[in-house]
Length: 279
Image (cartoon, rainbow, N blue to C red; front, side, top):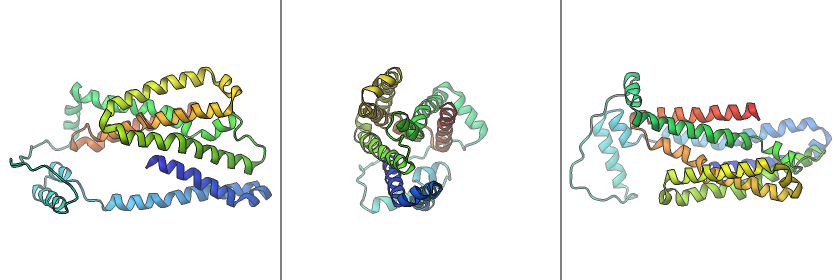
């Protein structure tokens, strides 16, 4: 859904800018209302998501392993199975609950102190860090890049903002959204590691090409540069921008899943900060 969110944000920005066309041309300070409206509208689906997040029931695994309420976990499983929405294979053997240790700082250090466990956390954190340096480095600066290549450097503020919105729509529709859906189609067939390694490899090649031949590509054709830039967005999302989010939610034990995911995500945001400062 992140891809659709990015695309929707660009569409909303275009609609808002178009609605303020006369006001922007009369008084450029009216642009201040535009970005506030875009952010405000973007908060609405966030509130809907927050409601569902606060009301969604915990998974039976969490109830059993963390809350240690076996009866409630069994009841939850029975409720899910009785709806008929899931087709599960029949298991003759009774379920045996494994008594896992409770989460604590001591157990956290003991668990991740073992290299076979610690290397997984290092891997997810470093991967997310490396991704976000590139993802936020270009993703939050699309307008600067579009302006640098001459796509949106019109002296008229309204025309410049409109072109930025149109450029973001093109990039999102042709690169970001398809990239996500390619991952949806292939993530279970190819596997997380394959898609992530493929994405990082292709991105490395594309960044080298665009970085080394930036002026040649830009001077040859703005459209050609947008094609390369769109490919970057495509393989960011048909690659590590999706898998770095999926993998940390699957590789850690239940008691440290949110912690491991949080550390990995925080590493990514550190990369995003470095990207913005360095850009």
